[in-house]
Amino acid sequence: MPRRDVSRAPKRSLILEVGKMKRRILSCLLLSGLLIVTACASHLYTVRLKDGQEVVAVGKPDFHEDSGAYVFRDLDGKRVILNREEVGLIHEGVPQPLPPPKSKKSD
Image (cartoon, rainbow, N blue to C red; front, side):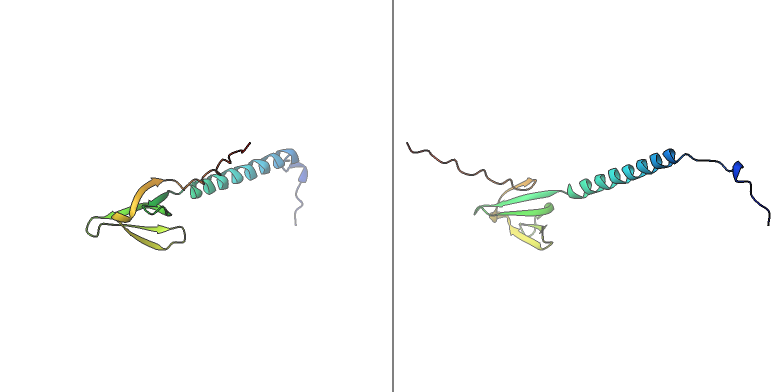
């Protein structure tokens, strides 16, 4: 078996290898972060009913002309059907929590 001359093999600097590995890890982290942000930014809609209740819809609610109802899926994946008369407002985004009421100081 012939012997290989290891002195002629190309030498790579350990510093360059660590630098490449850091770039790969950083690239993977950035890519996974971008995917997470994209997945979390799916379109959510808030459907506010006339009685004050709010339901969060995943995706824009579809309005069916023939039945006069909105159809959508809620956060649990359940199919929701609401009559047009029940719906007060539909807007994109999740409901924002109301600020706490300001307490009146009694002097």
